[in-house]
Image (cartoon, rainbow, N blue to C red; front, side):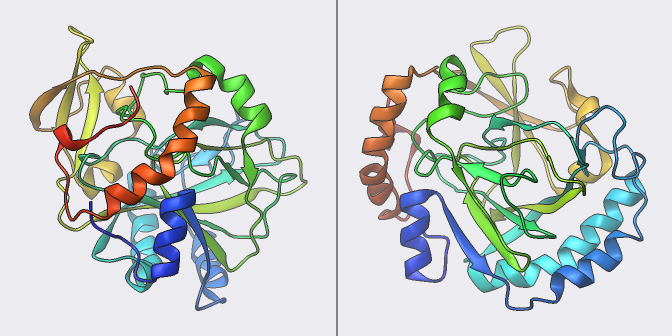
Length: 300
């Protein structure tokens, strides 16, 4: 699996922790984005009435989603080029947590490439200072690439058996200043708490993918849960559709194959052991230019 970050120090930190924190070269970029943000008109007006958060992908206004993606391309592509080696922007979201909005579940991001060959990343950029009080991002350092599970809609995460203990013991709060960002492996376990402040907590979430990777999305086969169906996708898919369009696991996309469902649920003890072994495994993984599925020795 090839390296993804241009700076060796960042690459080393990313392999160890699953994330890096960067300072944006242009500190005024957030103000520019903020100005354009206020000209956008999502159907939920950035303030869902169900006590939850706004997410661009979930919104039903396609024109808003297209305008937001143009904004992301204009302002975020330079950041991708500055730090990542041959990566493209796949999708982007505004995540807005109104005051008292609920927490965001503990999760890993969806598998949108063949993760035995490629690493996808999220660039998370707050539009104001963030901390535990206003619902900043929290992560488990080193929790990336310790499970080979495919992550997709309607499937349990490898840590489902001990999620309560996970939240109590293992998370690290990522406090960021306006003008900073975190770039993290999409397999890093993360979540955020309720926004207890008096203002909305706003952030950009951008997914970047290797230029050479085939873009995919996975769904459990409803007729045979021993398999995942794989569909071909692209950036336009995330603009034209929202999550309601494929709750049945049959998106309007080209079906390109199936893979066996080998997902396993860890115990907390297995998770702790995997964390201990993860760093050595990742060093070996990134020392190779490419790797076949049969070469992988993830913890079973």
